[in-house]
Image: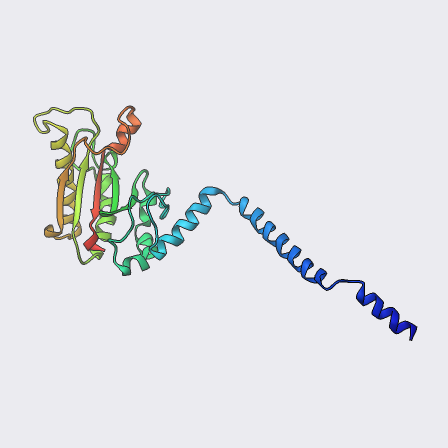
Length: 235
């Protein structure tokens, strides 16, 4: 009888709320360990991972990271223009464009105009010229193959220069040079890659749409470029 009373007394000495309290403390400890583990992830890697996930789901908004092809790119607008099919196959499109990582300073950007394939002028042309370099052909063939697979839509070829003036018999201004360069790229895509001329248009923007300040040679080099824009109806 004494042993039974002792057991009952021992059981009554531990309040029932202690079990719940102990469980709560364990959950809090697990939560803080989880938070600390996140703090060890590099910020850029975290942004890239989250951005890729959001991009695949088609919910990337203004000033959010979308995807990395050599560097993280910040889209300017939402992708409302993209078809549901494209938003669902962002990974597939990225894979097809992954060849740009083989070339220095070639970039892929997404904005409200479509997919922008940015080609530095120094890869394509000699300074002050619109004749395509032989070294540019492999890159343009890969770009052309990607465009050819897109059976619908149109492609805008934009030429851009820096702000250094040019005045030659062939190119009286940067407008003339940038237009001639865009025509050279369009002709190559038509003649060598089989892109129908009806799907191609050209535009020379001269020095008036820079992406970097024109205060150093490095910045001016960034502004000298040709942009192939895969317009929304193409994707």
